[in-house]
Image 1 (cartoon, rainbow, N blue to C red):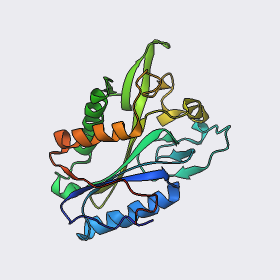
Image 2 (image 1 turned 30 degrees about the vertical axis):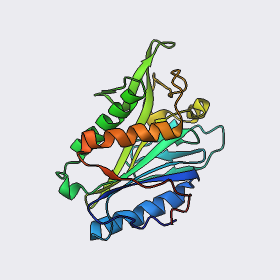
Image 3 (image 1 turned 120 degrees about the vertical axis):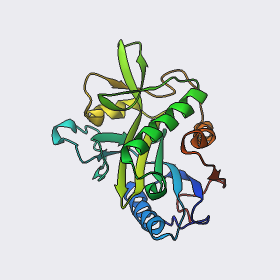
Length: 232
């Protein structure tokens, strides 16, 4: 899979993959792009995609939080956080930005990701919030009388270049989250736009993300058409 730069260094590029992208292919593509960004050979990149059903473990994941009755593939992701699920109907955003020119502050970057997702969800009619004691974005779960996670965040930073990013639940199979303790948080469920009664296509979600990126990160992204899985 080729994520070679299509825009000059210094421009934030936006790519949308069609179909389902195998996880290890995505990781290899991110690694190559991160190295190119660090070397000044490529610009920053926001890569939106969907994965086939799988579970990934962050650096804090506990083995006892994986049940996996579905037999899905599992991967050690190397990002922060614990177990999460990826699958069709979930918009995964891999965000490769150069923090050397953005303040070199990882915590501020994570807060910016949260603010970006909150702004995008607001455009879609959902009020999401963060919580000091649990990562991700949360909305009221009226059926359970508590809160449910609608988006997960897990990042990795290599030589001040970010990768991995977020997973926003549009219309995934929520039962698949039952194979893990999502992000190690017990007592709270997982929800999606569809479960909240919000009918939004993946294209509409992408449009909301694109429209709000500049509100948080202060720049526009380079527009381009959606591309196939190979991204060549």
